Image (cartoon, rainbow, N blue to C red; front, side):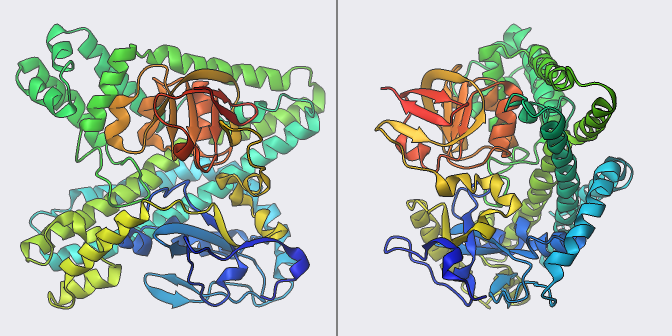
Length: 576
């Protein structure tokens, strides 16, 4: 693809501190740092087989998108960058999946993009209208059956070869579930777009935060998880023995204290362990395979319950607040609209509201649940490799590449796995000290207009001006309101317990494993994300002022700083 110099808005082809090895055609693309899903350096295994981008060609082909035909990934100095491949027959770029080089899918016809748009516009409303029925009747039961197969497989007593074949099954399941993810995503996108268009037409002077408030949900797996934790907290609160156990210093000591009484043992067996089984298939960063699951380590659950006890978190009041705000937003939207206009607006509204639970639910079943099962299979394989004296630790499997693992299954001497793991752990650790740029490659208006770029805060991030005064951090307005408080920087799960009631959470990014903190904090600031990111959506649900997509807040703000967060303007001030 020969880029017209007049179309180029900017280029970043690397620096002395962040050097980039460009393959054919890659530097012509606009590469976005995926700190929304993977804010940390990647493991080799996740990049090979766990990525969300692996099924994107299916998405673009299925829907007939005129704005892209593939979505590719590049590991740059340990960090994940992704780029959309335009639906342009002149594009020539190299990419890799499963450690194999390939040319990303592009249309043969020069007029494909101009012709196919009508198809996309025609089918999207059909997906929006029918998807919830497909989800409930056909898709979700299939997902659950796949989980039952993986969870019920006798991994401990299976051979290395049997587990290697199970991994291939898991990769097929991963592929299928992520194809569902994109179908769901487009169906929901259609419903949301139709509602926003109706608001612009029939309520052009609506409050700017109204569209975001109308995306909230009060019945989904995220709230189910919060309610289950709250019920455990209520049991602990009502019993002196259980309260005493939760006063221990660490989660490990809490568990030991619970084991020391009949009531504590009952709480573990009847409530905490079932919670692990139902809601524990998630990690601090679910888009990876190197982070332990709540199912494996209950410490985050114990910390969450302790936080609920400390704040006396009131789930009924919280969910009622969200429900009232959603109902208030609906009333505000429809106020003063009558006749045919009201009927059209209500139709778009009802279609969108019906889809709202899919935001947290698809994350529960796919982003969290599917990636978690991939980890469980890999760790089972890792244990077999330890038994075979190929690895020292089951967790080391994440630092092998996919084809290296398969070669080792066939021949234990195919590679010196220990040396590979040692070198890659060192490289992974070194990468954590780097601050990767928000984007690299070549920026054009067409690239910045890629619809999904908004998840990472583009094009706003590209055009954002630097702060005008010291002590100021600029980001994207994510959830309205202004709050002052004490900053609490959290970069790892073991720092969750440091968060105090009323703190303003400062972190790279959040996902549903972080929701336990939203019951304690008064505001949020993140490095990553856009207005549709998890951080933004959940902040609006909890009514917390939030600024996202700052790129560098975790480098500028430290725990204990007094900060003012303006979720309406997107500005964070460090006061002292």
